[in-house]
Image: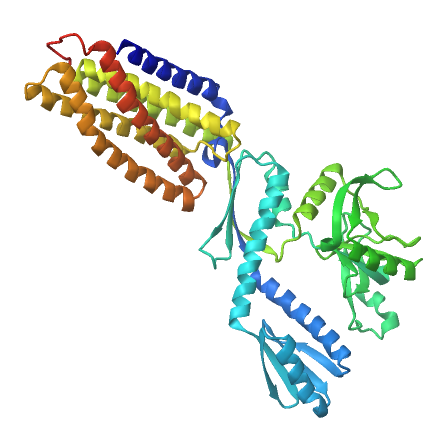
Length: 520
């Protein structure tokens, strides 16, 4: 019996020692947004942009199919969102156009009226595009934040599977403006041949084109921070885009200024090789999010690699590399909410939280000692062990690189755990009192008190853990912090209130020795 008791003592000492080592110093446990300070952002994905892009892609694809079938359609007109029309075609080609639409454009409804074919995107297809756009934006923002190096961020969709809002929480962020620009930048990178420019006025670009923008061209403005500004007349269709990049890295231009080096995938390299080989001596515009970053003159044929030059700082180059590596956002995003929480507010919350923990512990100490006397001290020793295990477990999760942070609701979870841990001891002590009143001996009463209260303790704690798991699954950062500390505290209380508290009774009241009274 004595060997068994010694083994239990060693087990408790090992658990407590390990928890203390893992949890010390407590500063290594990352703090949530409400304690560390940082940014709380709510974005709305402009899914209408994705519909517009899909319409443009459909028109481009349809033009290729019509050319392949040798069907002439002179006009493509975009109408309301998700709608466009084909006009100016021969009546003899009407049947061929219908067959082509039935075979290749199954996501579209169409109707023929007065020599025009009107196409409307089907509702199911539109819903799918919107959902996938938000999903892709969520993944892209996640990648960018990971590459930016923010500790314990919260990035999740708001409003269910069909919601178009994304919540981003960045605790401990030191440069909010940089983080904001990094997240919201679309990062649509395009290489387009320059046909005229730069020019101070748009009209100057069109002197050789009858003062009208050709159908296969468009006017793009130069970024005044990276170029001389002005306007450029460029090809409407990009030869290569950011999707053709296989890798990007920090590089230097011929003047030793920071630049972005890139390598292209085989298909993109072949297209870029044709563009540069056929247009030596002409400028090609490098366009990021609709603004020309630079327009170098093609000196020789370039195939699989090159650099993006401009008036970049080292930080701008690194941010551009991050956005290009994470991919372009499928649509623009609008900021609905932007809150910055200062670290001073977090420090005040930590101080008040620690005061609350200490106050709850002292009040519990006074009540337990007053009401249960010596047994109350037993419960408070177990409670101290419980707090050590909670901190140690949080430290272990950090070492294992499992996303976890201490939030203000997390501190509330610890305080709630204090009450739940003492509640288990109250159940046990009341059962022991009942056994003593029934005439059982002190050792026997202790044994029956623990065994008969165990089922009630397990039932109440299991339901609490289940509820906390639901909070982890669907809650945001602070709520998850509450659920994590609650689960750890509940499981720790099962160990301390049942195992450690029983061990203390066994050490104070040996089973082989007759004891007449118990301070309870």
